Every structure is written in structure tokens, then in C-alpha cells.
Length: 193
Image (cartoon, rainbow, N blue to C red; front, side):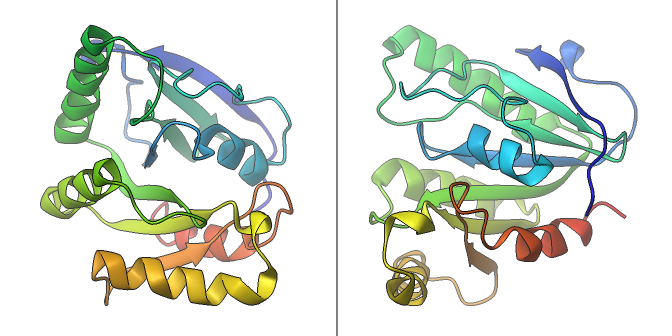
């Protein structure tokens, strides 16, 4: 897919702030620092559309990126080891849950995991939540550039086995090397027509 005019539209913390209309939404979930913002930038071939940081937990709101008025990438706050206070985690957890339960235009969830690590307890909780949502999803094993290319398939297989996946799409991804981008677009395009 060739993206011509991606733009940041809004940061939301409640339903009344979500964009209006019926444009499909591709939702990004994953732990803090798994690379959701880098994923957005890579997919739209821009360096700074989504702000990235070396400090986990910088995304504290739900960020909507309008992709050529065809669909939104929706970047949810990460979970896990961010420096949010307990109160902030509860608040952001509430509006993430509200969005996942009440977002009317969710077409696909993209669940990002770090290919180098075994899924954490938080990852497993999120995976269970996604399964219960009955929404379509794919899993990206991000940061594939951080391991030898000869090990990528084995690591994807290992994560698949840990999660007990036999039917869903799971793909490697690398924002750094921009490999696997075409395969991810192929999957996304199935859900935005």
C-alpha cells in the first residue's frame, strides 16, 4: 500500500473524543517499549508521525492516526514496566478497556510482542483479553532485526507454541530494517476494504 497523507488526528481518553464516522480502525496493543509508535512510522514511511521514546510508557492516551482517510492506526498505551503510578495505570487501563469494549469501528487488532523474549504474564493477559473480544487479530513478533535472520522462524514458532496458536496469523516484523512490511500490509488490507 502506498500511503500519501498520514496524519495524527487526536489523543483520546474517553468515548466522546473518538473520531466520528465509520472508518475502519486497526488497533495496536502491546507492552511499553515493544515498538508500537515505530511500527506506525515504518508502515507509513514517516520518521516522526508517531512520537517514539527510549523511555517506556510515554504513550498515555489513545492516539488516532488517520491514514489517507481510509483507516486509522489506533495506538493504545503500553502495559508492563512503564513508570506510570498505580493510579495512572488504573486510569489508562480503564479507558483502554472502554475503547476495546465500545469502539464500533475496530476492524483488526495487531498484538505486538518482542521476538527476543518469552511473552510476559501481562502479554498473556492481553492475549486472553483479545481472544475473549472475538475481534480479528494478528500477532507481530517485533524487533526481528535484533536476532540473527536464521533464528527468526524458530522464535516465531516458539512464541506460537507458548500462546497455543494454531489458527491466527503471526508474523515477524522489524521497524529498523523495514523487512516484512509488505506481508503486514497484505494482512491489514484484508480488513480495511
